Length: 290
Image (cartoon, rainbow, N blue to C red; front, side, top):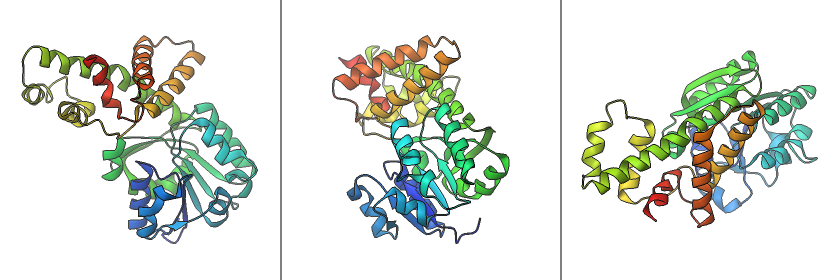
């Protein structure tokens, strides 16, 4: 795939905007669509081409990346009569980077293949910081030859890029990621509250423990924001709740018990009910400050 390939990008939110920008800066013509046009204004000023429908994106693009909201949104964009499967050109590459259901990723792959379209599920991890710095971890499911064709595209947006297996494997891997984060965030919040209640300087505590076994990406990136009271979203609670529900549903389908995930989900739901859903996932600290 050459740099002349036209890329359609659907969903230019907190992460999608940065991802689309990297593709533009790499010399690709990028056509964008998002439900709220005003949110695409900055990218349009920088040269992105606005399309007023998913259908137009489908008709004009060689590669289409979706970074949208819920599995229902993904279904609508791919499967409705005005969607990608119905209107994409033969041979188009469809890359869903939304965190969605593994079963839905398999369905997209199967329906795309019937139309001679190439589908990959490629959810990401790294939050707003990873998106801005083009250092996302990208977990991919699909055919190896299609992955290899799209690898240069992925390398513009991320660093840790791995094919995990057939369709749905990228989404399963993202579920593993979200399950791992959930109890870790609970532990991080409890650790910071312990430091505070013990009369310690949290920043000094972090300086001591972050280079040892307690160290983590979440500690390095979220703990400083927690200490400063900055709960702006890199990744919003409302979206994480969606991800945890997907992971829990998938685990239940495999007859797995996930008590850590269930505890974290209940805590985040309580925060969302109190109006914290737009804040970042590190606002879990507020659960302990009540």
